[in-house]
Length: 283
Image (cartoon, rainbow, N blue to C red; front, side, top):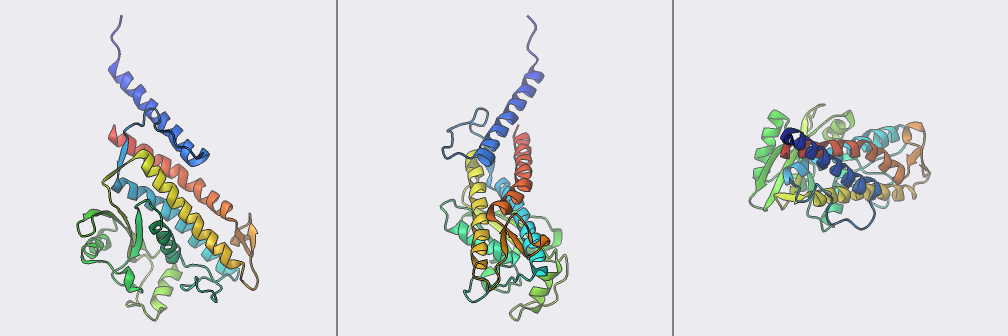
């Protein structure tokens, strides 16, 4: 009998693990039935770090923010829809600006038992509640130099922290901050690093199932914020038609299901690839 080829066996094992991950991700992101199995073959004991989790959720956040900014705010303004920092006030007939979409998402996370926190901070914030603490500001100055994320453990709050550069990618963001009466800085320019999206988590590591659960909660919050906006539009003097069409097609808004479908179509494939890359690094 010929000896077994260890190299081929190792390759087969990795393929098996990858297929098991595919099964788990499809189960969670596509099927998503209520009961979660205790284990999926090949994924037992698999963990990711909180820093890897931050990269995953930041990727998801960047996608939903891009869709919101371009497809809803940007295209919507051309159709007569308004967006305002006081959008939650009953008398204000407007939706949230991109940064406020993120803030509303953060508020939803705070009310959820999963201990993931999120905030958008700056060293020149309009709202002082968004000002960095000394340690965060030190890290942010490095972000402004390198435009790369910073990962560290915050001793004072006992949280693992990931900070990602928030760059002024579109003109309205620059104009809004420069013209705001309470802005401490009025000379922002396109592509400036205006702040940082900051994620916090208490544990250094979490299981694969826990990580995907966190992502699912985050997506639920994205949907909840969008649904709050749709509910707000019902009180407009001339509510936009809600359905399958987008503002680029006229005075329309996509339903929550259509909005999330567009998001998930882009996000799920990227998240799956990122998870595969994490697995490869661990093998």
